[in-house]
Image (cartoon, rainbow, N blue to C red; front, side, top):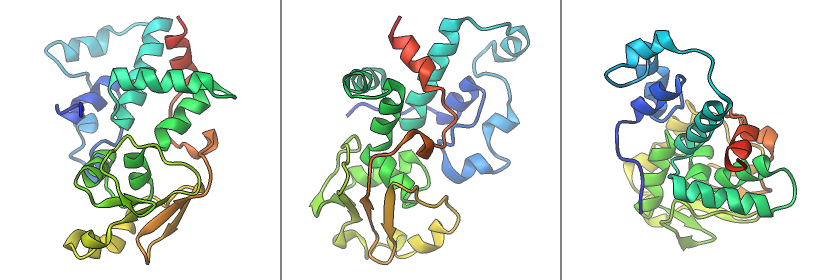
Length: 213
């Protein structure tokens, strides 16, 4: 299962903004974007002062890369998601964001059970999560309305999940399209996410334009 394994702070610095790929660290003074505001690489500092007006292609590419990095998706899979979004009725950009939001690792993160999407991906891969009562270890699994996502009974005795309510107090609340039952450590997908439910500063129209060239 392919995934990016390099330093994630470089990804934020390349995009010039926080992508919150390291959870709580991104909110602390240790955040690399605040300590080093220039792009990574040997000529990063020079590029900081030489940047002019970006071309339309550059803007489209950066927006696509930002979306990929936020959700932890590689190019081939992201392109496949776009083709699926293109076939669905409605706005292609909104459909694409809905597909990304319904990935199992993102749902675990949105429920507040993980500090970041990478953390949520690890939880899924280690078999701590079930969907409709079945153990599911595929982070890219797409949930549907009515699906029940829960921490498996065998995993609830682990120290992390025992202390989970304390961790969740410091995390954003679950979005409206997810119903959370913290007592049972489970959530239900009440509906598909809409554009207003996605709080990530993305311009999905630029992504559509990039793939429509």
